[in-house]
Amino acid sequence: MSSVGIFYGSNGGATESLAYDISEELIRSGFKVEIMDIAEVSLKEVEAFDNIIIGTSTMGMRVLQDDWEDVLDRISNMSFEGKNVALFGTGNQEIYPDTFADGLGVLFDLIRNSDANLVGQWSTDGYKFRESNAVVDKKFVGLVLDDETQHNHNKARIKDWVKQLTVSFN
Ligand SMILES: Cc1cc2nc3c(=O)[nH]c(=O)nc-3n(C[C@H](O)[C@H](O)[C@H](O)COP(=O)(O)O)c2cc1C
Image (cartoon, rainbow, N blue to C red; front, side):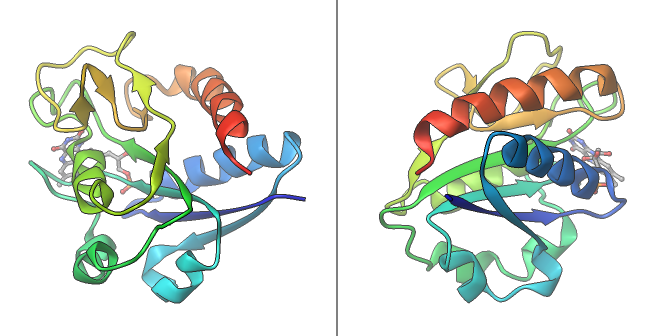
């Protein structure tokens, strides 16, 4: 059975809870999943997986969730060669339309030059915002979930995204 490691950073629990929702969908699709809080893992544990999902909330313009700040340097030096990496981010498009899901863009910048096979890009259709550094080539670099203003979209978005990932994950 293929294994997926999900690593998340969460201040108030929204990203954590969504990480578990993603995990449940992957399990339904036949994957074995380990889910870990980035505040409590060593990066060696991240490297152990061939399929990796990384998630963060956004705490301001180009600001990741707090626990990621402690591991940024180490992550940018990690090798993701031969690994499938998918990213997800949470944010609030109504209160922060100019920095929507920026944290996801920061994660992307960290690993864009690694040898990771980045998967899981996501359409911006259905979201309403002005600026986001998580948009590259007109798409989000990973799944964006707005639990505060579009909670009712989470389930379908996660389902579609996981379906997309299962094609790429090995
Ligand atoms: C101090 C603060 C700053 C925030 N800044 C942004 C922001 O710039 N862009 C955005 O999309 N969301 C922003 N948010 C919204 C959070 O990303 C959102 O509430 C998220 O669901 C929190 O997830 P968590 O509970 O897992 O940390 C901010 C929230 C807080 C509390």
